[in-house]
Image (tube, rainbow, N blue to C red; front, side, top):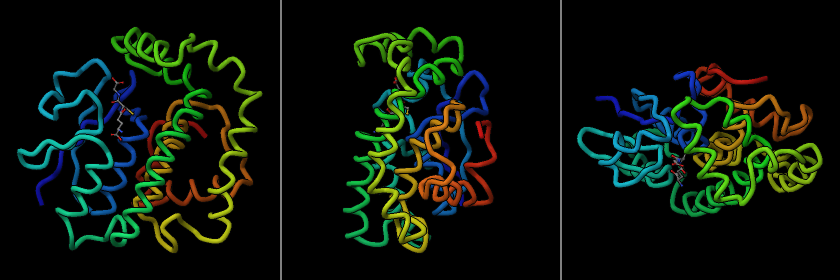
Length: 231
Ligand SMILES: N[C@@H](CCC(=O)N[C@@H](CS)C(=O)NCC(=O)O)C(=O)O
């Protein structure tokens, strides 16, 4: 099988791959056992992914086909490699994974960003610093420093908001049930984002969510564990 190219967001250290969305795709490719070659990509390298029609990663290139957006990529992989283990476990699983993917992007990502924004900044390549700060500060309406200043006061509420996840993982090993599916990778992405750039402890060590996160870190020979990261 020819390998797929993945444009993968990197920090100043080209091995520090910290994008939550790229981690979803990285794990989806591993789940499908698709060989991958990654290209370290920085926020300001828009021209390198112009053929995808978007300015965000992940982007994959399979033969001469360019695909962007982690959800679209997951659907593409499911359709293109039907004989490999399923990412969704059928149409119902796909529909429910869509919800979890949106929950991860719209609830988890903004919450976690408020805890790690400065840590992301501090790991960026020099050429990305101004772009990252100005684009994010415009979005949040304050400085990165002001956003994270109260993180110690906010983390308990963020942990509490994860209660549905925690409760689910008390009765099953994975969001996919007995084995991991794309829903797991979609929710794991934001936790791996934090782990790759920040020593800040988002999850308590006795949290079932932490144990689940460790199970994902162990998958595929420790693919997500054995990278530049904290803890
Ligand atoms: N919903 C998109 C989100 C993609 C996205 O926002 N990616 C970020 C990295 S995590 C990015 O490339 N940002 C580029 C920028 O901010 O200019 C997906 O899942 O692929």
